[in-house]
Image (cartoon, rainbow, N blue to C red; front, side):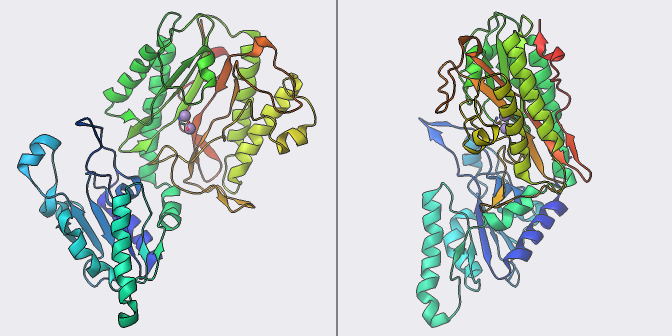
Length: 439
Ligand code: GLY
Ligand code: MN
Ligand code: MN
């Protein structure tokens, strides 16, 4: 099951209902990123893909709901059999019109010439300033032209408005079809983590575990959602460890953060387990504490709750535990308020998940109001504790005894907000203390 044409149409309609007399422009990913003549894998821009389903580079979509005939216009790479021999298949202008439901399709090299037709009666341009500066400048030049004409014409776009605040709330609530895609990515990531659990032994290198994980992804036709983290021993204390080149030693904790991408919808799972020996006393204490924080945080995932509650719940459990262990000292409220736990826990407890791993959408409306959870939100819940050998306790906090050093634990699941509570999409991977000791 993927996203059908009717759903793409619904998405465009819901978006264009909100922009009224505006014209929106979204660029696809650029043609290719070259590195000494080698192309990196192409990855479509998520906003562009969300609205079109068109999976080719070097294209632009223009949505002009106020235009008489052409409300949905695609600009694409034209067919060119010689170029396609090198860079792959192109749908081309004619087929794109019929396959993607567009009112009109033009070759991309006509963008400059055709764009004014779709801007001239718009009251504003909806466009997100992206990484492609040349394209940003192109849009600004078009806008400038209309501003200069404004005194004579008395109409035309008077502003460029960021498209994110209009589009991203739509992306934040997932449809049934989107949930199915994330569910599938979650299932395969769970299978990969279970395979890693089987495969991990003292003497095996981190990259061998990575290979087993990514073999599982690829054998289901999926790609990595982000560079897989396979971090043994103290490497687990490096949040974005990607070298994956150490040989695993008996008694190490192994932290694996790996997820996959299915039709661009992502999963994101972390598990931490001991290899070749039961947990040491300290490892087990920290593992149990992180697990408790995660379970309590997940129990807060339900419609009507603040997004912020999830992080706050995890922090309260972690700080309580660290105080009991003497790894933090002082007043609970003050430690939380002044974030003195940050040397142990320096990241947020999760993020939205969808077409992007760190998916579109805000978390806060200004300082005061956190986003309220609704059915259809998908988020990760991923508390951790990291006691790096180089940890620097916060001011007036105790030094950490050596026996704790090098312990890093994170547990991450993908959670769907449902009508009544939540569903953990990644529950096929175990996380109980008993199952996380690979003896
Ligand atoms: N693996 C990226 C993240 O957990 O956010
Ligand atoms: Mn994550
Ligand atoms: Mn992750």
